[in-house]
Length: 282
Image 1: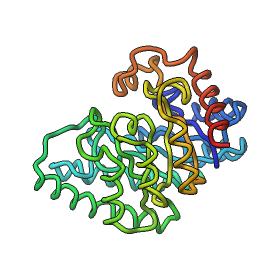
Image 2 (image 1 turned 30 degrees about the vertical axis):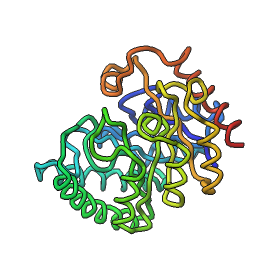
Image 3 (image 1 turned 180 degrees about the horizontal axis):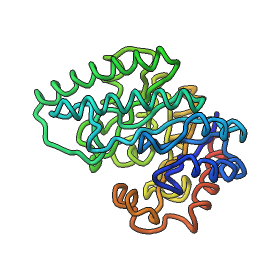
Image 4 (image 1 turned 60 degrees about the horizontal axis):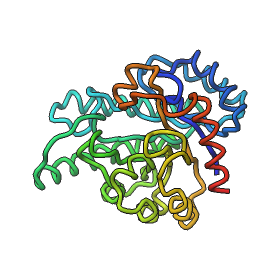
């Protein structure tokens, strides 16, 4: 099992220079993995970043940033097309960086919530299955894997539960498409985090972790023993990534509702969370 950290813990947006600054810090903390949140498509020189991460012995994954103009099921076709183009860019980027996994809410813009009838949900699900089928083939041809992440009800009204992600993944039925789970969102939506993980089973391709308040894993009331038992039961041996945010970056603080510090420092959030997760999952 590999342990990683998403750089939203410290910065937004991430640039090539940010990767050069953070890579040695992340490695020195004891992480194996470096997660790149890809906000702007021109922020990072992927080939140079790949060399930096390789020099520090760090694995890499990419986290999609689904903004208002990147939405696979939006009524506006231009927005849908832009979302598809962005995700294909992300697939190409993760391969150039030297990784394979692209995760995130690969369906709709974060923050877009709307009421749906059963017929409307069925229509949008059909559309998403078609979009993700194309993306899964694109990813599979390039040796990449996609992880569909459920978000909590305040960030999307479309896929909130592991069971909803599983439905879409099973309908696409392609080895390059799986489920990604995040303990923060699961803590809001799932009746049992362990049961959600068990339901995902072999479909689980990526895991994000943080506390119920977005703080360091182990500092709050997420039922971590249940999480660990389920992860071990399904034989998951992939990457466990800490994803949190900093109140010091105003744009991300507003988007993620981070209004106060969540640890003594962002370095402490990462290092203390890593220590807890390694002990939990040893």
